[in-house]
Structure formats: C-alpha cells, structure tokens
Length: 253
Image (cartoon, rainbow, N blue to C red; front, side):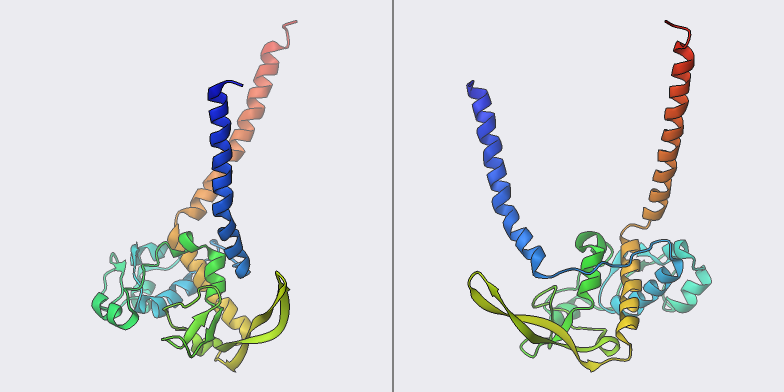
C-alpha cells in the first residue's frame, strides 16, 4: 500500500474515533430527558397572535427580542391599530424593536446576569426543547429562586407561569437498575393546582412556542411555500424536457 493512501486511511480512522468519543456525551445527555413534540403550525395565525400576546405580556418583562419589530406582527394577521392598542406601551412606536424596559444592571443584580435575547431561541434550542422546558418546572427549596427544571438543571430563571400551571414537585415513583446499582425513578407531579387545567396550560405554552418559532424565522412559511412551487415547476420541466427529447429523436434510428 502506498504511503499517501496509508496516511489517508489513518487520518480517517482517527477522525472517526475522535467523533465517536465526543458523540458519546451528547447522546447520553439527549437520553436524560425525553422531549415532547411541540405542536408547531406556523400557518395558524390565531395561535401566532395569542403567542405574541403571551410573549409580550410575560417574556418581554425581562427578555429582549431586539431583532423583531412590532411592525412585523402585521405578518401574522394583526393590524397596526390592534398592535398599538393591545401590544404596545404608549411610548412605543410601531417601528420599534421588542425591547424590555428592565435595566440591564438591575437584571444582573437580581438574576446574576442579563437575561438572554429570545429572538432566535427557538432556532438555538429547538421548539421541542422549549415546549418541554416550559412545562417541566418544579419546586426546589435548595435553589436560590426556589425553582428547578428537569430539562435545564439549576436554571436561573424562576417559573414565571406558575400561577397558571400550578406547583409541581419531583417525586419518587419507583426504582431502576443501572449498571448494577439501583437508582430512583423520579416523576413530576402536581402538588398545587394553578388557574389553568393541564390541557389548557399545554395549549397556552404551545401558542407561545409557536410564536417563538415564528419569530426566529418569520420567512419560513413563505420559503416553504415557494419551495413547493419550485419543486412542482421542476417536475413539469422534467416531463416537458422528456417529451421534447422523445419528439426530437423519434425519427432517428
């Protein structure tokens, strides 16, 4: 075997070993918490409008969405008058970005750091992660905020929607054997009900995550529709080209 080929094979083998060694923890982390599927429908304008209202009333108190403007909400079926009357403060302008009134220094003093911008959070974390995360808070007296989360351990953000969902606790429901030793099986259970039923809260969170997904990529519905049109055109062009080819060569033997 020639030396360059040997070097190529050795390099490829080392790369595969390296990727395998680094992939292990990622797969292990993904198995720790099973993510629920978020019911995303970016064509459901009613859901997007409800989600925008939820976001502005709850999330915008601490988080920015500086890459999103109020005027962009017209793309989900709202008029400028509806936006001004229901979703904006009197000092805001329709062309303004969605920016919190919370002072960054106050946020750092209260939470330890400035809450992250949420414009692209759905693209970074994923819709399923957000949907599961917002439904997985539980009471934890050892945490500085009094809250913890199954998806995001030792989370710094308190459960701002606990009045709606209620208070969950992490309870032991059984045991399992892992690698020769016994570990407890923990499950979230509702300790104190909120103002919403479980189904109503799930729908509430689904609307919020639907809007967060839209906000991360507002052009996605149009891009998907355009992609279908382009594929349909290519199929027609293929059959037209095939017919022309047969017509051109039919008299050639």
